[in-house]
Image (cartoon, rainbow, N blue to C red; front, side, top):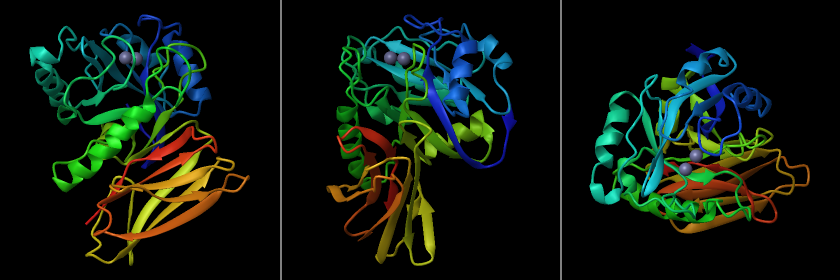
Length: 321
Ligand SMILES: [Zn+2]
Ligand SMILES: [Zn+2]
């Protein structure tokens, strides 16, 4: 299934239907709610089963891509297998001490799939992620509403802080960095799309969307009402989120455009932490610039928060050389 040209596509890669414990939505309802939430793609990630794989074809279309997946709920952490074969079920019956997770990650990747560390700081047994991140392609730093009092709510602030710290080290070691993604983990009506990942893809197809996520050409949005653009330029050269800017030690300008966040607060982050803060107007539309260079900053990334601190949008980094 492939359609539509290159562009930015919005999608939620962690959703459950009635075929997962606690899920109340049929695939038909999930597809309808995904369209209503302004999404272009979803990944169906039932707990350890492929029971809905055969049903999605009838609800997908040129306006909604459905990626087949699974939430692999092991004893010591959950991970998302995205882009699996129809009917493929990845083994989940192990924990970190069994030393077998790498084999299952390889199995998914060999088939062209992507492996995501899910809600690494979930508060319940088996939800806290104990595997090394090195084996994974992306980290779900934002799972469900940014913060709530629900007892099963993942600690997104902790996941983001951990990911932010690892970025500097991973980029310095040239070992590659793992992009952040955000998904709703929807089980109930009204949850899908909060948050979702906005991906630059060559077309709306499973391979192209997964390639965009893998490369970090993406940002995370609280809802489809939020627009973010993020570029970094050195002279005439300009790259977007996920890109690498060859600045040759010269000055670089990071530019952020935001729409749909009244009185929002734009934060620029580097390996040194939060380095620049600017507030948006009550209209919620604005552009902010910040200047640095590659000696000061190995990467720049952006967070946009509501005035009270709740996250609205979060970008992957641009790396500077
Ligand atoms: Zn889970
Ligand atoms: Zn889940």
